[in-house]
Length: 451
Image (cartoon, rainbow, N blue to C red; front, side, top):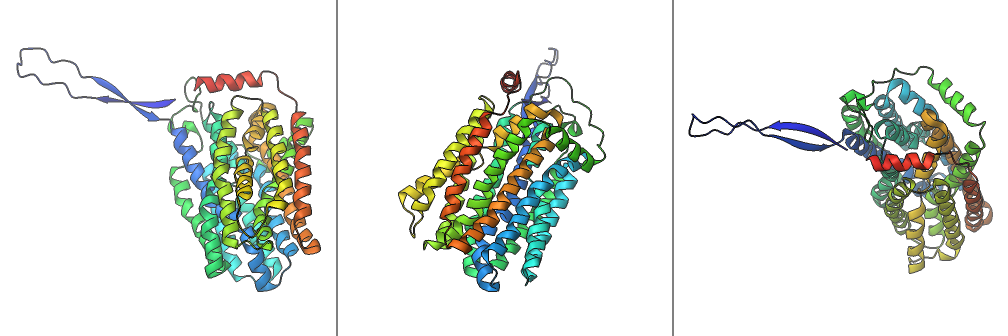
């Protein structure tokens, strides 16, 4: 789907004026649909905010050494961050309907930059919980995957699975960019310059969002990508954002599919953000691996995460989302079961195989989960997905705390790895029993074909 612009060439002049002048020729300059530039801006925005998601795992040991705080205490601050990240998402999606995407995202970027900047002055655990847990949790939650869902739902009728995969991969791309840089800064210059770095990166995205992002295709006189017919008028702002978010939850919670999706996604968060992203670096360091090497491995996960997520979006446009989810969770659980015997002081081939395998699966669950929300909940799907994401982050928050507490109690993360692997097997079974909406697959296929 492209935009077309007519270009007129000047009439050709003939040296014999008595001959008639030939009419001007018209050619068409084919431009990409504006939806793709909006998706690109959203992608860059998600990258800019990803630095804060990359930093917690690098701060556990430095904060423990400087302040003497236990890993459980630091993990609790990360838990608050992850939980608020998820719980804010459905309200942020509703606020985007009320005030627009640009305003909500711009304010969110300023809030997370302020929270990150203030951490450099902290000296007590409650300040870590306030700055990193509350402020950054609220700000980053407004830029959660509900943001990607809102952009996709508004700007695309076709290729939604693919676009969802691309936007989801933005977090992995940010991890790839920030993790090696931040680990180098933490090792060479301590943790405070690293916190300032991600704050500046978030602020640098604000002008881009404000000047270039648009709320609806109708703002630029276009229909969504892949849609037939003229542009639809811009919807009237929906008041009562909080009430609408709660109402969408109340309605969705009456269905079994919501609880199955939310429960499986809670396990997804527990086995990724809560466990690997937060505790992989200190766990590898426990086995003698240098912090920069462990952080680099986590960044490599981000490389394959991009490939896996985009591929998952492509698969979601074509195959049963429930079966895709079941396969993703089962394979992830299997890989986590092997991790305790792979950790060592050096990076060897089996560890590299785990990194590649796990990376391909990291957030491949997002496109099919989002697709199932669209199938079941229609125009409220972005808000409902926000609540499903809230479950994801609550699961992540619980394991971020439990992982740190387990390390304090047992001196090892092994039990946490095995427990997460078993939970993934349960998530696979939950995904398979989600009900299928009649005709949903044919709609997806026709939408893909129409593009």
